[in-house]
Image 1 (cartoon, rainbow, N blue to C red):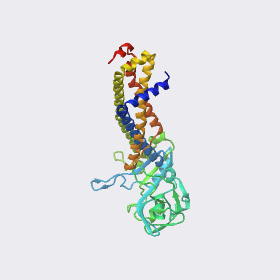
Image 2 (tube, helix red, strand yellow):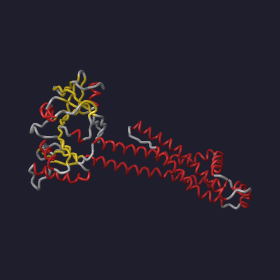
Image 3 (cartoon, helix red, strand yellow):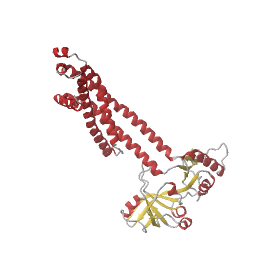
Image 4 (cartoon, rainbow, N blue to C red):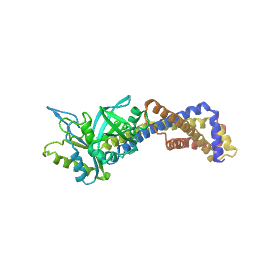
Length: 411
């Protein structure tokens, strides 16, 4: 008997007991559906983090001011006014391995264009910030050196601003009021999407740093005109990140005249660390859920073994008759293995559809990112087939070892 004949015979025998075969496949179906669903959600979450890392930029360090003291109360990080544009210049010039050091000053402001208004983030920057963030301009141009030096009233806006204030039409050359100050739009940024905090990165307006300091109400603290919200540092090589962070800390302590026993009035952070920690946590959680879901596959395999053993007992006379007319032991073994594998494969295929549907429903209802990979579906079906073979071996071997004379006498 050929392998195809064994497979076809096994399929025909399963159709004789459809209810029992369907209930047996249910364990494999649930297990594969759970595995596909968990893998899709896990891969979607990891791809979302990877996309956030990509939009964030590579090899970045964030230098933030320290906490301000209000009486005996220490306020949150970033509330002090300890970083300046001069700090950024010296970091770029004196720390080996630093490619760019871009200061940023940002405030929330009301934007007006025609009869539309929108509240957004307005940030003052120099020509290094967009390069450090790997953020390209989709249409228009970057600030010129003269516009940066003179603090001209020009702006580069994100796609959310284009949608909200200009109804999606070309905004180049249009006038945008920030507070009561008119700015001319000279560029529109490429899409960045959501940031690590879940806030859209495209809801922003960039203006020259000097223009933000002198023309945007509330953009600079009353205590000093030089204070920056943070400095974004781009490092030439990932391997140099720890050395550069230590160099920045030593330089700023010296510049800020901090005594040896005084705490830092700034912090140096790697923004990617939070995302990488989140990615690792998601991976661990996905592996845990996948392990739990895989138990269903084992239970389904045990169910297949149980049903196949019952089938061997019920068909003892049939096995004896087939062996009496010339069937070899390997033919009997192959037939029962084929039946077990068919049960597992059909359950795996139906489970793949069910798992993909469940993942799509989760993406639709909960708004979670999911990635339904053909490779994961093929892997789940392959594993279900192996489970069918593994748990069908013992019943098939037991059927093939029956004595044909004893089997024919079986009642």
